Image 1: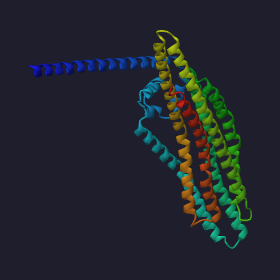
Image 2 (image 1 turned 180 degrees about the horizontal axis):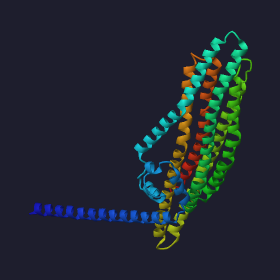
Image 3 (image 1 turned 90 degrees about the horizontal axis):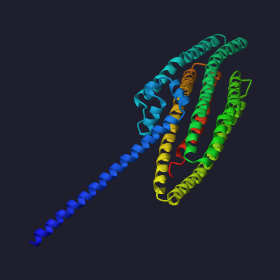
Image 4 (image 1 turned 60 degrees about the vertical axis):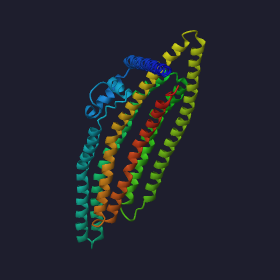
Length: 394
């Protein structure tokens, strides 16, 4: 009898405990669903109040943007990013990059063929006129000048797309950064905004002005002295070309290092100050307002969480735009540099050493344009990443 009673008590205890656990689990699920619903409602409301028209226009201007990013407005994309659904089609993106690369190869291959053809013709004619030095020099000047014109015309186009790319990045900064700062202000990051706002103005103004007014002329000077130094063995300006190349590298590296170090240190410090201020404000609300202080504090947390998610999704969208902006000019420059390397390899056994050195020097010079684009893109990436990381934990 006692054993049966004990067994019955144990069975009742197990059923009672399971019932309590079930009710707690059900209550937790209900609470989680309610919180998720409130967050989604806050996200929808804040997205509807956010001015993203210019950002939507930037996405619509991207070549084949529907193929890469899919259909929908910028708000749809932001909503998908918030919920972890990146709408970028990886297969289409890879195909897009490969198509650009192959198109550039096809477009620039005639330049290589023309340079090689002129060099071969020059070698044949110069061998026949080897007995007359003056005629040989005239043939060299004509051939070398023709190759220089072909190369310079291609480089002029690359400089134009580099300048255009940097200008496009500036436009994106002017569109994306105000949205990020608005959201950061809504989160209570007043100190951070006070740091990032002048930094963004400096980046989109003074830094880009230096890139266009100082670094590009240095590139042009190096190009000119590279052409002159390979014109004849009697004129030697190779060291001048190296000097301007060194000035370019040191100035570019110095600008990126100083700007990145300054904004990183200031941004991390301001983020810590804002984080402490927000926690103090929430603590004051929770403990200073009778009865409903805890509910108000939790409501503020949900609103701030929604705003933080939107801020990060806008930042990711800006970085996706940045990638799509730089991929085309960077690939064009890479392809032209590789083809110049190929041309110099072909010319080495069949052409004059000065022509071969010139083409080889050009293949080494062209990647400095990539450094210009990637330098601006890197600073844009750093400051956007810092804004995205600011006030994520509060």
